Image 1: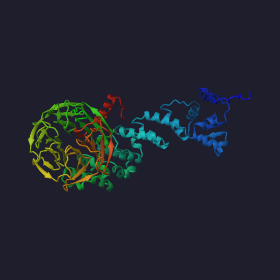
Image 2: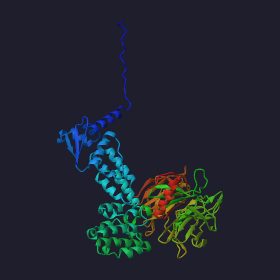
Image 3: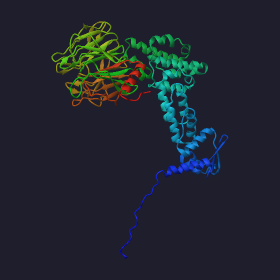
Image 4: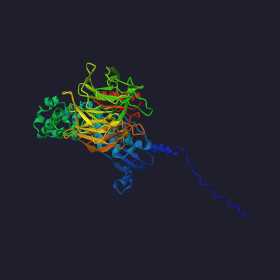
Length: 594
């Protein structure tokens, strides 16, 4: 029997489901019946008997109070001011039940109480509720409250709502009562959703003139955040220059001089070096325009009819209605708020046809055709007419240039380039049109030329440092940037910058990836290099170049892998942008941006 040892029992865990909840239910019953209570919370005329352990378990504030050497830890009655009786009762009830009914009448008081007494989960619930109730009539007040109590998530949501609904908010009573610091923060943001800078200027003047004697000295600091150089010249002269508050202040007059100088540069032939470039000369995201990416071809080699556009404000690409014709190596440009797609290649056929897209109706319409079918042409808007430059077919490279009259829907031929160019990049700068690189036969070109529409004449300018065809080209701050392309079928990641004053090219920072057949467009101080081909794959990636800091970063990808697409910038009002984005978001079951 001595060798028959009894084995020790194995460890076993016993758990009663729901006992924790039952225990708290019993504690809540003790609260209601004032059983075993060991502290009284006094607020106003209300004395609430409760349990230290329960309050300490829910609130770091009460935990510190009851467990420290402070006098309150030994007191039976704790007096708390600045919180009303009903709110304190709701807060203590929440500590026992983890429930509270939030509504518009009590959320503000509960946020105050839960922030002060460190009921953090309840404070977050109040913030979430109040963020769902944001409205043009209350968002500024909610933001002030959130900042006072250190609720940064609600501050951020209120700020986002304010910027997106700025045009509605400035007509509400809350707006004229905000602090100068808060107004300055709002109008400093490039995310302010406005149609133009006039709306920002008028909002500032409305706020200042509401209490002009106290606020007139704040005007220079506020106007420094308004992008006066981007106001229409007529408005600048008629309303800003004539305002007595602006005229009588030297700092305001300096800002006005900067705006005039910028406007003069825009309409004159002053050297690029004289262009004043500051944050005030950069558009805000809402009126900086959008980028369209049209046609091209992808992994299966077939041409696309699809188009998508990029909203800088929303930082995403959104698909729109397809073209009526698939097109690769298509010429694309915007004029007067519409998109023009011309030529290209599809179904073993070179195209001379053209079509126009109206973002306001989300519809394409057919236009008159060019005289010569071709792909790889450059398309350029010169303020009125559109020019179709160069291109190629299966046997020929073209130097021809055709001019399209938008109003008459008629094409005509103007002077040809000095050199045939297929896959040519074209841009407009100060009334002149530049044709950059391209192919002639099997050879990529580095030569460039400029067209003066008044003289109907092409003139060679300095050649680029590198041969390239199928490159992207944009203008920023009076300089031309040429991005990527192919050098004799080798994709390039190099980028060159042209100074029209010195007639010289220089390299800037290269892209991370070589991109032939790349599309390019500019928004503000940023250049977008979109899609392309890297010798092995079609690309859906986007790189963004910051001209101010000479640095590339990755951007949001396009929907389709594509090269040889038509890419163009297009102006678009904020209301149309909002309508397009929200309609497309509903169709794709995505959330609204508001």
